[in-house]
Length: 86
Image 1: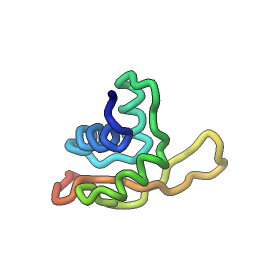
Image 2: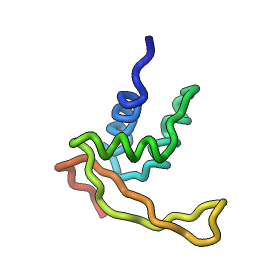
Image 3: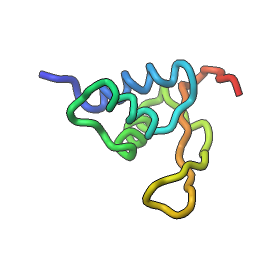
């Protein structure tokens, strides 16, 4: 049996966030690049990270979208207690 979606998100997020803070879409893209068949959405990743105390919301950053005329704010995630270079 495969790992749960929650466990997959937690493992990949930890790998991505060890170097730099990232958005849910960047974490999602890492899962896509790993060749997974069933990739969680950015919203599912955000909800999963909110429920795990190791991850912390650092800031809200502007991002652009193909479906929106204007940019919008998304969450920037990090690992609790980790200092990131600015």
